[in-house]
Image 1 (cartoon, helix red, strand yellow):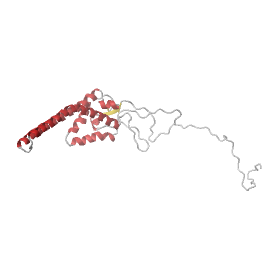
Image 2 (cartoon, one colour; image 1 turned 180 degrees about the vertical axis):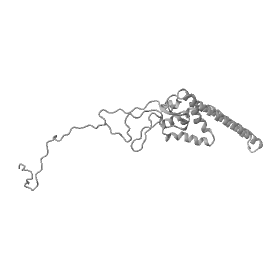
Image 3 (spheres, one colour; image 1 turned 135 degrees about the vertical axis):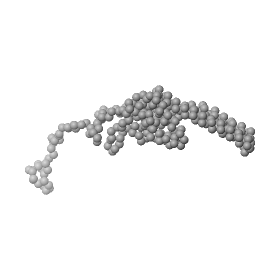
Image 4 (tube, one colour; image 1 turned 90 degrees about the horizontal axis):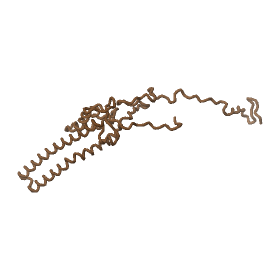
Amino acid sequence: MPPGPPGAQQPSGQPYQQPPQPYGTSYQPYQPPSEPYPAPPGGYRPGDYQPGGDQAYPAQPGGYQGKDPSLAESWQRLLARVIDWTVLTALTAVLWVPAVAGWIHRLRQIALQYPDTSTPAAQAALNRAGTILLRDILMLVFVSLAVSFCYDWLQHARWGQTLGKRALGTMVVTAAGRSKISGGAAAGRAAVFVLAPAIPLAGGIFSLLDDTWLLWDPGRQCLHDKAASTVVVKTRAPQAPARQPGAW
């Protein structure tokens, strides 16, 4: 049955409805936004950040503050130190292994010469062996610290990298200008890192703080970095992911 005039009733008692308009009659052309991306809180826009120093990225929604991507990661620094410790252990083992073998041989001779170690002669021999052992340990500790200091100091002063840092792609530079560190700065950095932990009791606490300080420091600096005003950076600059065609 053809539609009647507006307000007319269908046979079923329902009013007639306006037929839908043809598709496309209400089309409105798309108006692009004035900005391609909404600016996050704080007014930061891409390109505002200028790398350099130990500053952090602007705060993001939720209170998160990003770190400078050029700074070395904590796991890179840890693995680099593990490699360096392995190398130093191999170098100082040349001194420690013969010394330990000599101490064991001396004690065996005393045991063979004096089956009863409670005699005055056996006690005197053991005291002499103990004095020699203490002297040798102190001398080897001093030499080991000197080797460790020179290993850290000379390589950082010459190249800014130890063998471990070369393997992990990191380098020590100045915190202010990201330039090569001086020999004096490298020596001070090595002294705080190597020699300060050798102080009895306090040195162990300092070493723990020194190694873990970068976990909460904005510039990922350890205490020996702060003492020398240095930071550890990646030698291969991080690259932003390539944008896919058609992606926003």
